[in-house]
Every structure is written in structure tokens, then in C-alpha cells.
Length: 316
Image (tube, rainbow, N blue to C red; front, side, top):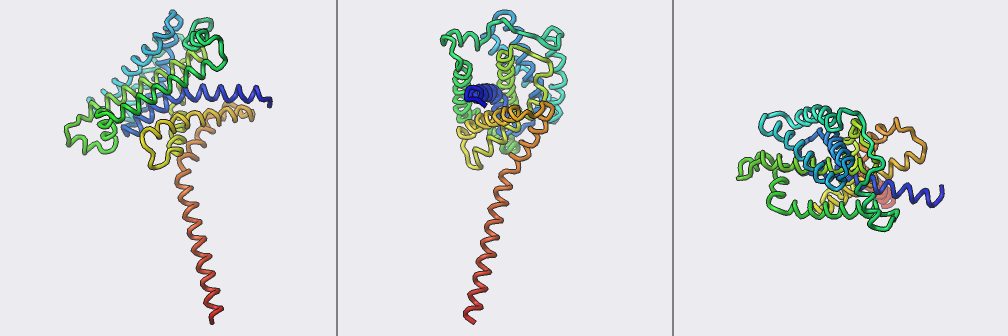
């Protein structure tokens, strides 16, 4: 493998990892911080892609970004409404929203299963023209965007509202007994999370210049795998800032693993299995580390007992 091909592989993995990290951050907000299992991720991701693609075709690639986020926030509001106002369990609320989003996404795309935006200006082509045609322009743009979003998220979690959302995830009963309304914090948290998911879908659509109705299928699995990898990097005592950075790093590492699998000529049909293995290994890693540590302690204890026994025999 030549150096240019390696650099191209790493660059693509970094770009896709940064785009996917927005969905991972959304899962970090809803699942880790808010303790809500939102299964509408797949549909919301496609919704953002569909809205972004249609606006890009209409000649508004920049407007596509906030429009996709607004659509994602609306999706998150519906999921939160089902959960907080109608008493639907969070898992079922996500499934209901995800099912309904399939038809909505088709409607946004003009009831076509796929849409091509080839030949249209995108945020990436506009930024590339602005930077004089640099081949690293896409990576630079995504890094700047993720940097801004990460800083905003870290600052947000330090505000009273952000702390209220974190408290809701830590102990819903305690929050309910205080002056905090958990229905409001859950709604705001899901709206923000789905806005990030839709933004990720919009960016992937403009990146690939293509939108498909099944584009978001399995996205929640990919995001979960990346989230768990990031949590392993962060450790058990990581602060919010460290955890946010590690979540983004986890997304990049996951994409590098997938890129390596591609270079090893692993069939695309096995990617779901690869994702499942990555999730299983990442989840088991902390426990395996403790198991290895405990095994070392037991081994050292046996050695000490053996040495102590030999010493007693020598004295006798």
C-alpha cells in the first residue's frame, strides 16, 4: 500500500468520523446524560439528510444545515411528547417516531427512495473554493465545526439548564421532588440530541452528494459502538469536557477500524457483525481489565504463599 493511499484512507476515515461524531454526541446527550433510550436515531438521521438534500438541490446548501437541525428538533419534540405527556415508554416512543419518520422522509424526498445532488454546490465545495481548492478543506471545515459544537456543549453542561438535564439522568425521583420539571428537561435534551443527529445526516448527504431512504439504518448501532469506545477512553472519572472529546475520538477510531476492514477486503455484508463485535469488546473491556487485575493479584498471592511455605520448610 502506497503512502498516498494510506493518507487518503486516513483522511476519509477522519472526515466520516467527524461527521458521525455528531450523532455520537447526540447519543451521549440522550443516553448517557439524560438516561433516555432514544431509538429514533435512524429515522432522524435520514430526515436531516433528506431536508439537507432537497434544500441543496434548491440552491441553498448553507440554509440546509439549520433547516435540518430544526427538523431534527421537531422530531425530538414529538418523541419527548410521546414520552412525557402521553406516558409512552422511552424505547416505545423512539420506535413509534422512527416508524413514522420513514413516511415523512419519503414525503420530504418527493416520495422517491433516493435523491442525487451531484453537480450542486455544497458547504464542502463552497469552503473548498474559499480555501483555494485545498484537498484538506473538508477535514478542516469539519474540525472547525466539531470544535465549535464541542465547546458549546461543554459550556452548556455547565449552565443551570445543563446541570438540570444531567441531574434528570442521574436521579429522576430526586429531580421530581425538587423545583426542576423533568418533562421540560427531557424535552429540551431530546430536541438538542435530535438536532445534532439531523445535522450529521445533512452533512453526510452533502458529503456523499446522495440521499437514500435507508441511509440511517443501523446508525444507532454505529453511534453506540463509537460512544462505548469513547467512554472506554474517558475512563470512569472523566469530566464532561474529557468525555465529549473522547466521544469524538471514539467515532474516529470506529471509522478507522471500518476503513481497515475495507482494506482487508472484508465484505460489506459483515459490517454489522463487525459493529456488534466492536460493541461487545468495548463493553467488556473495563470488566476484562478488572478481571486481569484481579487475576494478577491472585497470582501474586499464590506466589507469596509458595515462598512463605518454602521459608517455613527451610527453618524447620
